View 1 (cartoon, rainbow, N blue to C red):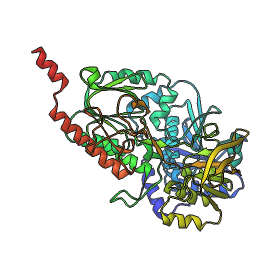
View 2: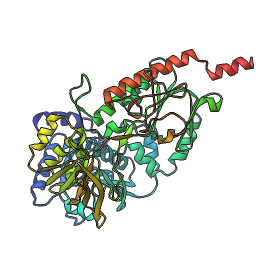
View 3: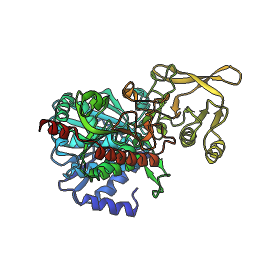
View 4: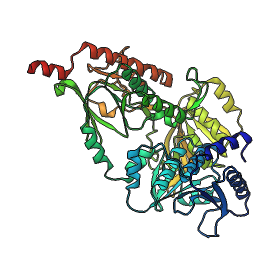
Length: 531
């Protein structure tokens, strides 16, 4: 199972285990059980602190699965399946944390988890190709190690297909709490804890309201926001960054091959690097904060104000808006109803759940064609649907797509409805734009890949927006409000690319600094008047 290099790395990690760990295997006579048993034997052979035993034969335990328990305690986690691929890191962290190695979570979050009251039985369905799943798996594993009232089982959806079908799980990560659907999609530890701890929002708002005003307040934590925060902090001025989800859209991106000097990386890795880089400076990072209203300084008589969804208000002499964008939706009947029930937006995450099935990909740009190529290796058949009269993807991608035997391409096709039966997708209706005829396709999944829409609805009426909802900026990143700047995918700057967003963020921060040194501090003005 593990090559020599991986064994050496894992052995080095296991040297940090300080308390005995028991691997308890629940197996049957399947090939996957034999494969899992081999993996567990290899792990147990790498450390004297790790032992392997068999489950007692309980009938209600998934097979193949295994528990990682701290010997002599009720602390542990369970994996149903073989956690390789993206989940191998989750396996390693679980071994370390169950074995007594401290996590890197903040002390505040750790204490919040330990104080949670009640019984929490979490189950998470993942796929080995999902780059978002490990965040959820690792967060819930850590919570189960820190609080004995919390239990967590991670389940490979591709291995337990009958269970996935019974529960109608059609997107990963998909989390159940005490047997009921609880959440889906990428969630950080802080997001999960905040959702479980119902009083967290009010406590956080009270803390935020006590903060002093910032000289530069960045709204959004993607590439543009991270660059803006770093460049502002390097000027030695009071800098804060408020983000609904640090990393933004990049967190959901798989392969990144066009970031100059970085031949290849993946979204979650880039987000972790950005977060670490921001953390190297004196930046007040306020994560899980959704902005709802911008009140310009001209209306407050002093500072710009940003009101948050939890009721808190932040103040700043200058603001950089970098709220990014999100997946554009089709806006047709059935899309919202069947989201996560066959309608999906991340082929890397959810593709394995459609193994052997018929799916459609909507969109003929690079994202759509790349998604169709990826899915063709997993599903039974792919139909690519493009509204225009020809595909818009790079020619090399089109050539690859057309070489695949299980792919059909429809152009001049307008999707009109997502069809469903028994609560899940069963087909798709479209109109042939060349002759007006209507058609239906029998499908079990629809992957929407039609571009992005800016996250700027909360700014309407307060700042100039383009007809597409983008923040109008000039070549210095200045908006229609003095002292308010913008950068990245939320703006009118063309070509929505990570490298461009980073440059825009740096430019906006430098413009904000230039603005600050040319305008008086409101507090200083009040002091002068008082004197």
